[in-house]
Image (tube, rainbow, N blue to C red):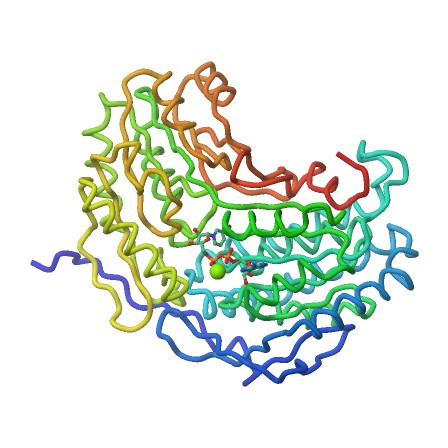
Length: 482
Ligand code: NAI
Ligand code: MG
């Protein structure tokens, strides 16, 4: 008999919703300009390796143009505008993003490889929500508990990663504008298209020229932005390695920085947890966005007496994960974002095999073109294994066990990171005890990967500096505020 008699028919979202230009320039001072060197690179759809467009590689002199445009806009317009007027622009941007939501979702899925179900239901609505939320703060900064009449830094350089391209743009640009700063933002080199579409939204909203500048390029462009003397503050999300480089290069420069870096979150399941819900939370924790999530629940830590039962249920649930065409509305797990990221996931997974852990994946057919990795779990993982310590940033879960609650906490905290953690238990007192003991910036109880613009997000230790979102996330954009 056919293994799955209830096969779904394909349900692809229409690609015709977006028009992608053959090539893009840089968005500087409210207009499209060509990069000084004329250098371009391709951006591809990771699901089938089709070239989508050519993107500009901004050089040092382009970075300089963008920073000067942002400075001029700051001095002439944005710093003089009352908060309630700035707020109107943020509201306008939020509404246009909602109006163009389907276009943004399809474009994000094409360029990034994430399932349309996620770009449509998570990335784009949350990005708009960040603008709505911060629009509300623009005229209330005096009442945020961050001092009387708090002042912006000036020009902010923002560098974002490829895992949530539009959402990370919103996390960066919305608070910066609400607090009165102007911005030069660089998207990641594999996922620039939604940032370039956002530039069109800025034009449509008639945002004053130079308040938001979008420059594309690779790490060299990012480094030029960090090192430009006209930048007052850096906001970065990405790898811990680059975060450390940035921290070093801005030392004693007087620039302030927020760094949102990696993670290796523990998702702890106690014996009294609601098992079926926990299984859903484990799957959401590690397989959401192909596991390309800094706060992913990549270390499952299960109490030993429920381990067998939980593993059976987890494997059964994993067999139902639909891997394939990201534009299909039924797809759960899309493409890995790049060949480089796929190579990293394969290398770390291979270390799991050689170090003695046991690999399991459900039977699933991976497309022949593009970058793919089956949902995977490793059991028999010990704390010294690389797959228990290093961020894999892919659909790979490492499973560890514990006997006593104290042991669970010790294992969970045994990491150089401290971004997030999950607790599954029916007992409120245990949840409160464990959340106090865990060294992580965000702790979810009986849920995972839930985000809201009103809730601050950020980490301890090598997961970075500062918080983004909520009232706490305003402070890093205001001088002297803590
Ligand atoms: P990355 O840290 O190199 O890239 C993030 C952003 O920083 C991109 O826009 C990139 O162009 C820029 N960048 C690179 N080098 C720079 C430099 N020297 N100065 C300024 N900006 C620079 O991350 P990558 O190479 O794409 O991924 C490597 C690993 O990093 C992943 O496997 C994952 O483990 C981790 N990562 C974590 C993220 C998070 O959200 N915590 C996001 C992306 C990657
Ligand atoms: Mg890199």
